[in-house]
Length: 286
Ligand SMILES: C[S@@+](CC[C@H](N)C(=O)[O-])C[C@H]1O[C@@H](n2cnc3c(N)ncnc32)[C@H](O)[C@@H]1O
Image 1: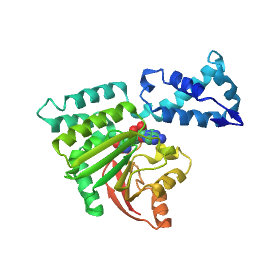
Image 2 (image 1 turned 45 degrees about the horizontal axis):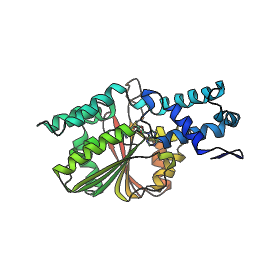
Image 3 (image 1 turned 30 degrees about the vertical axis):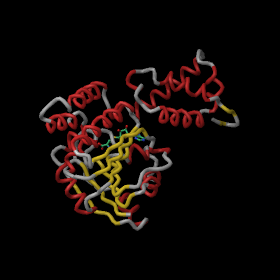
Image 4 (image 1 turned 135 degrees about the horizontal axis):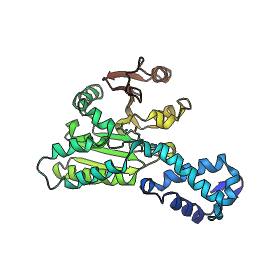
């Protein structure tokens, strides 16, 4: 890697990534994502670069501390160790229990966004597919555990690609997808780690989900990142969702996102809004 004309050896980068991840709550994040955060940090803090080779220095320890703090902000915010553990146990039990529907509900209940959607998933997917027609391929970007709702889509033939930055979650999703495939060979799913801020290619799909992702992508700096990603997504339909309640649970007075509507008009994309009490979905046709 080259920062300010200084080449940093691969081993040095791998060593610091490993130090950063030596915290239980961070050890499942993809190396690629940690590396990208580290590069961004070093580009902004070039004075830190020479200390990468001095693991005992206080400056090195500071780099590790600061990257961990960035990771906790973007990653830790969405997960707790307890929930992840419970989810893994539930996924592992799928093959041995009779009531798989109950288990899937319990899995979806382990995260607030999917728990909230339990009462709307049926209607949501029916409404989306009425607009898009039944898809054969879906990609879910920054999927979290949303792909556990695949059975609620009631689609016979489907290829599903899920992407996020947690190895543990992608492993659980792959176990789940294998389970679904044994029940219905026309379903195929794949979960992979991908940093959406640095991706090169994605598989072609009929629909792409970007549920509750724009804040994560734009990081409070306008909406160009979301716009670039939407433009690059190789699918005709992109479904983008937003919470319609504030962090404290209050209903937003203006739940619609005007910037989203302006963006679609400017790019000549059609959009349809599907609104529920806690979440608003824009079904965009490119
Ligand atoms: C608010 S959650 C939304 C999860 C899911 N889309 C849903 O609505 O149920 C944000 C998700 O984005 C993921 N994430 C954050 N930054 C990411 C990045 N750069 N690339 C891919 N995923 C990312 C997080 O790990 C987390 O699972």
